[in-house]
Amino acid sequence: MILIIDNGSQYTHLIKRNCRDMDYNIEIINNRVLLEEVIRKKPDKIILSGGPGSVFAPEEKEKISEKVINAIFGKELNVPLFGICFGHQMIGHVLGGKVERGASGEYGIVKISIDNEDLIFKGVPREFNAWVSHFDEIKILPENFEVLAHSQTCKIEAMRHKTKNIFSVQFHPEVWHTENGEKILENFLKI
Image 1 (cartoon, helix red, strand yellow):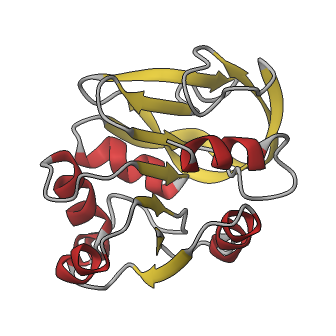
Image 2 (image 1 turned 60 degrees about the vertical axis):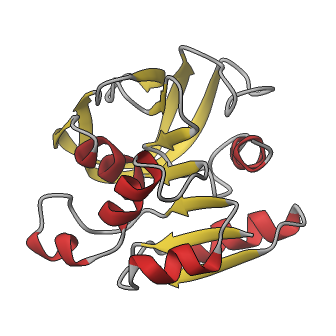
Image 3 (image 1 turned 180 degrees about the horizontal axis):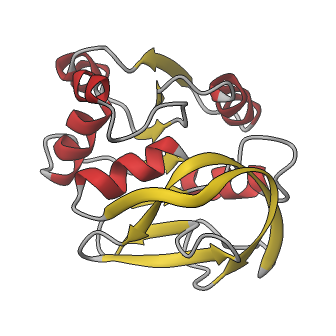
């Protein structure tokens, strides 16, 4: 079972539909549930959706995303994790990277360049167009992470932990505007 933690993205149901179309059992839960409920569901994988929030907003501390990341990193939950947009920023922030406002808010199509194919970019062209909608971005990687992709305006469009199955992307693979987005999601789901 794939568990999507909804951080308020307008695209969360597109993540679910894409996963369901690939024959995965999917459940969306609100990001205000208790960590115990997430553990009780025994997910095989977790996806942190995007959302309009900022990792710096005090109300984000009340939500489950930070606790889930720490539980996965601490092996209380030993499952692969995939962060999208806000989920990407939250992973970076919680694990010690540096998240800051970008030079300007990005909304629209950007060209993504793959630096390291790794698992999530298998079978994806070295450059592709993707949909972005964000103000914040990761400026410095957390310890033991590596950059997988960049764009002209954002140097960390995708990253992964060097030894754990923790991946994240700044862009939105779930929307039709992103070329090969379904393939990126499928690659994560096959881990």
